[in-house]
Image 1 (cartoon, helix red, strand yellow):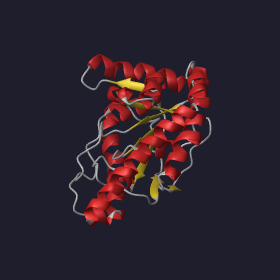
Image 2 (cartoon, helix red, strand yellow):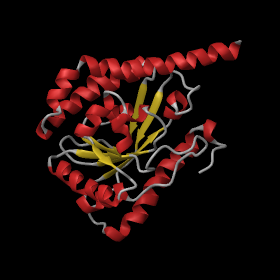
Image 3 (spheres, rainbow, N blue to C red):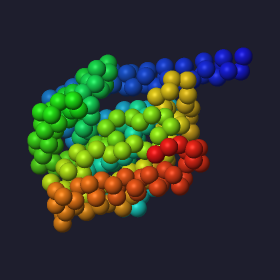
Image 4 (cartoon, rainbow, N blue to C red):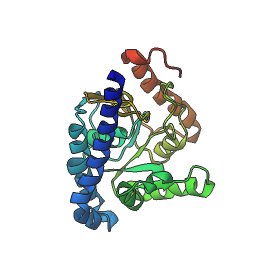
Length: 254
């Protein structure tokens, strides 16, 4: 009987999440739609998504963010933001972390999510990881967005790893792009999102969601041949942080 009520709680918690996501977009749909009509208005769209969508969802879920920063983002400067990926909360938490407007690079399947997907395909950079032309097109679209003074956010695992994997292998895209455009690369660790709202249906619950923004990796003096070294160094920073601070993950495999 205890498990029954616990499972009911998990289901209601997930229903509440999707209600928050949908209702907040619906309430501000006219404003969001107008702000998504032109790339030059994207900073205003970003402000709305950050302040009237992402942050209310986090607090509405009882997931109170706590952000620790080893280095501060400079207003008006472009960055490459990378973090571990374990939960749908990662999107909201990344929006909380950065006041600097950034554009997500994400898989095309996200465009199928009702309401959220409508705006995702309008303002984000979609990629079909099975299509070489789509992957190449990402660089052109990212270059245009960087030229507009925006930052780019990529989850370099290329998807959500299996539940027992502490941190998946990183793909090259974010690191190649950061070097090509000589922008600082910002490693970010999300500690608690898997525990709060993982992709395992009967799981999750409210509590704080901790984030650490690590010291940036400067890429101005790096060349294309350095992307593998940069990729592994950044991954190691996040992996060691996860391994060293999350007791619940001590049994997880790399």
